Length: 494
Image (tube, rainbow, N blue to C red; front, top):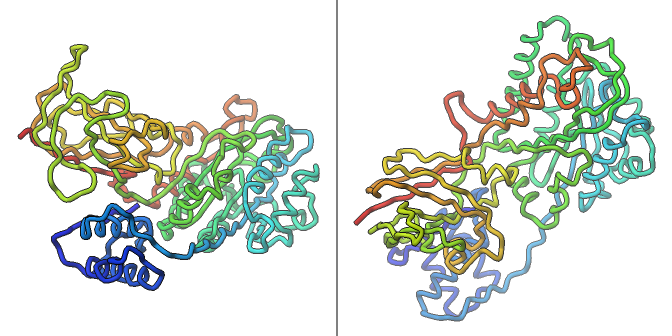
């Protein structure tokens, strides 16, 4: 969420508009429109999408009015609740030879169940705006609703034997170039695209290339498609489900070998960044984003180009009594404490002489597995002359949000604990959370899928890492070390 600094001494269009419309303590729709226009003109109170954020604007107006008229009564905003348009979902189901084994009734049935799981969580799944496509050598519209597809998965019918699906396209190849073009170009405002696939790269000319050349081609082809769409986020969900049928190794695309056992399958979810944020924050889509409820679920990761400073603050005291420091907040006009002065160590009774400072952060807008945010190895402190280290990152439950926390960061999700054994000095700490390529993707990758008896065959996908690196590298330059955020904290001893 964006921020809006309160500059009381500075005349501005927005402040002047507040003076005009809010003195009576009530803001109606016409008056509120004037406030939005003034904020937009001055580029104040903006959200992640660059538009005026109602929550930030109303907080700004409340604080300005409270100080201006010295009133303890909050302003009343008489506004109609704007009804958000429901998100529409485009479902892309790969129908190729390598997918048929998932749909065999002799397996554990996790494949069709997982598809049913995810369709069932779409609030308006029966809507005509939700579309189904079959993909292989191209992208083909299917004359069947998601609701009917769901009925098929729950009635025991084999998905690939359904009338509207079984004759679509050439099942010998999967042209991800055409598939990604369709998905990326369609995933616009209020749209989410979901691809169900084994994500194995295959094309008619596979046999013309060496293994290394084919993997490089896969990476560069994927990168070329996604680099045009840096405003889109991509979530990869891995499930491990039952398989019984023909498997086609990279060097035998037309041969096929019999295989029975577990195999990975993936849900690739694509949406504009602001739509993805809605999926992960709107209560209406809570069930949809609970990927762990999918049959066979193992992992997920969100690829994003977004990097934004969260709302954060240094705390005088923390809910767990870890803070060992005395300081004053610098007068810099901010609602949160980003700079501290007169820092000294508060000695603990246990004899620990470390200086310990706690920060509260709202990391709710970072779409990542919760364990990632609490792993200190993903964080770094740059320009650190005072020996500071990140001691711990603690998730905050609602009952742990003390007054000292909520006064500065109302919706804090984590505490970040900084400590040093050295004498504090004047400096600025640049604290970053890196957006690192997931280890589970590397562990889910094979570069040789010809040995079906290899124990790793059950959990790995040929060229998976290569395709995912293509997406990851499309968002960043080679020299760039991607970050979810960077914050700067100022320290003065005196």
